[in-house]
Structures are given as structure tokens and as C-alpha cells.
Amino acid sequence: MNEKLHVLVVEDNAVLATQLLDFLQAKGLVTDYAATGQLAQLLMQQQQFDLMILDLTLPDLDGLVLCRQFKQSAYNPPVLMLTARDSLQDKISGFEVGTDDYLTKPFALEEVYFRVLALCRRHRLHQSPTLLLGDLTIDRAARQASRCGVPLNLSATDFSLLQLLAEAYPHAVSKRQLNAKLWGDDAPESDAVRSHIYTLRNALDKPFASALLKTVHGIGFRLELPDAGH
Image (cartoon, rainbow, N blue to C red; front, top):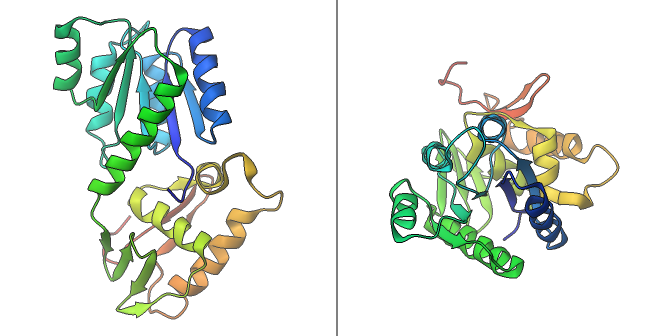
């Protein structure tokens, strides 16, 4: 996988959550954490995650409800339930609301990590290899893009940046999200995102009649099709 995986951990047990977060971060994953269902909902609105690790027993919201909401998002990311609810009916209820995997407590952290990798790999394999947005074509497999049939000369990072923006369409992606997805904890000290936005804009928009890449002040960047309005 070319970009850093961004995982949302939803777990109200602070000790267990810290163990999970530390372990996944040590493996190179980017993580966010929510101890409540409401915070998880807020993060889901603000960011795009590759996977959610979800405890079912939360202080304010049943994890089954949260899973259903997460799976109804446009990009439909995988969900791994980690829970003490270990009856057959509990597992059936989890799969009925759309969970992709179910692991009961106690569990080994290494197993969680490998299940996360497997779920994300499977999710990406099931994505269409070609993404079409107006006159923009993105070939995920070949890591090439074209506009109006004209190949775009993009660096590997610029292509990853364009793909992230296209997959988030029509929503904006913040600089923080882009930094996390492209570099994780290894982000360059300089304003690398803005530099790559500049080179991407030169390749994506400058040779053509209309601009696709928009700056959303105070938020980040997004793609906007000429006939899509605001």
C-alpha cells in the first residue's frame, strides 16, 4: 500500500486504547482516537479513515449504531469490531450492521494489526481500478492520471495527493489529513503539502480551460468539477 493507513480507534477503556494506539503507531499506521460514540461521529465527519476499530460497549452510543453509520459513508471503509460481547447472537448482530471482521476480547495486538492490514488490502482490491471524475481519469493500478485524454506528468507524491483528493470528492481534505496520509510521522519540516499542491495544480489545471483543484480557506483542499456548482 502506497499511502499510510489511517485508522480510527473507538474504545472507552483508556488503558486498552493506549496499548492499541501505541502498537499500531509503532507499526507505521496513522491513528485517531475516540472514547465516545459522539466524538467518533465528529471525527468521521471531519476526516476520511481507511478503517475503524470499534468497541461495541460505549458510554453514550451503541457500537452497532456507529458501525451502521460508518458503513453508510460514501467510501464505505472496513470495520473491525473488538468487543467482549462473544455470543453467537452478538456476532450475528455485528455482521448484520455491516462489520467486516469480529474479534473478541482478550486478543493479541499482533493479530489486530494483521487483521487491519488484511481488511484494508481486501477493501482496496474491491475498489474499481479506474476512478472517473468529469474529464479526469485516475488509474489506481498503474498510478497514472489523465485529463481530457492527456496524460498528466505527476511525481509519485503528486499522484498520491491527487488520488486522496479524488477519493474524498466532493469533500475537502485538510492539510493535517494529507500530511498524515502521505507521510505519517515522517512528514518533512517544510510546508510539503503546499509545495505539492502547487506542482499538482500546474499539471492538473494550468494546461486546461477550467480548474479542478480548489483551496477551501480554513479547511484544506478539494476537487470541484466545473458543472458541479458549490
